[in-house]
Image (cartoon, rainbow, N blue to C red; front, side, top):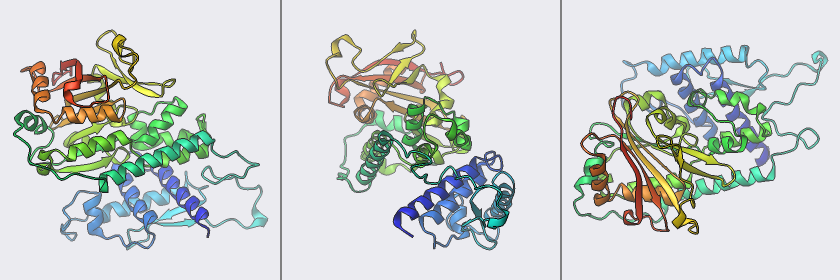
Length: 432
């Protein structure tokens, strides 16, 4: 099999997993969907892998790495349920799928195999080409060049940012002077008894919405139901499938995360880096979290928007996100709008908000920006003791919850070169 054929087969299997998980057999069961994605992902990355019960219990169900599987059968119970749901799907809704997923008993590694074809003499009509198949030129045109360019750009950004995070000139942390305001602020997100989830945005889904103009709600994103409508979008179904299957985050998110890890206080923090597509309501209800991006780029921001005055809108003509203050006569802040910065192409904005999590037992920090410089500015602002002290003074004793909008008017991301143009306290009950 050629390399190109192997890649197309792998993409076909991944898309099949997404379709299965978006079906009614799985979209109401987050645990079964998480289990299917984890097991399938392990096999698609390494077909010869051996998946052990301890691994699944730890990675999917949050059990300790050395937990007693004889006393806790959560993996076996859910694996049995998963087998039955897969059988039901491929016998009904997935009866026409050219590939089938099975999990043999006594094993946790899914098996992908092609469905047996009917003998030629019984075939009444030529079978339809599945949506994920590679079309020939006479059947359907390939993805447009501009979309391939966008995908290539996303891939480069993701590769560079990942390389930067893992190997890219990461300076050694040095002892910093005492920063009591910074330490107090971050103690609301990083507590000693629980880790904090850092949830990166989903650039592929954001690009899909930008190209099609079709917003995706959190419920559609969480249960994968938006995948069913790919064929109804303005994009070629193959191109849309290629786009939404990519797991890529933005460079600005990677930059913010990198700066966060360089803070001297970070040595004391327990963090869990998560991709938006793998996150869940259960975690957002119980965990402290940092959500990076806006409601389009990171749908997990959506449940908190009703409690915020600052919303982020997408300007298709300028290909940029900009903030709008919905609590102040829908005042918008597009880069270059201000009279004194119209000639300054380096103007940008970032918003910072601290709110209770969905369960009320923890906190969520939401950071959004117009680009990498703005996100860097947000990170620098949250690491500056004088800036945090000023923020707390403006929030006042009614805190700790707040939202703030910061304007940048130059290349510098230092707090002294930024101006806070909105700062308001958010009450715990109503958020306003």
